[in-house]
Image 1 (cartoon, rainbow, N blue to C red):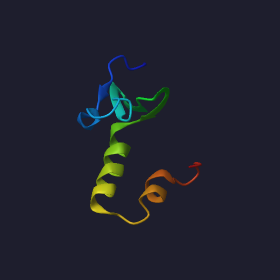
Image 2: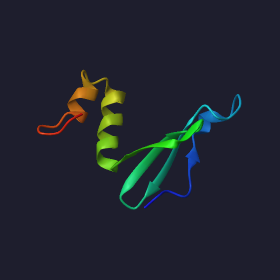
Image 3: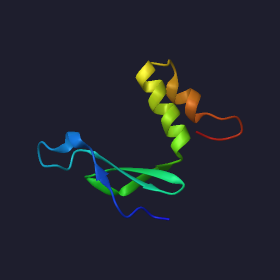
Length: 75
């Protein structure tokens, strides 16, 4: 299922309005894209994104490797 309604960050009011991240959701996934490149979409489930954001907020060392690397799967 493709997202139909995108929400821009409230921080994107300045400038030309195209330098921001947009978020949309479907029943099983969250979708992220840049306003200036809407054709490229990053899709993830809510739980991994929540863990990733929590780790960034708390300053967890090696966060990208620890969250994206899973045994038997490529990063």
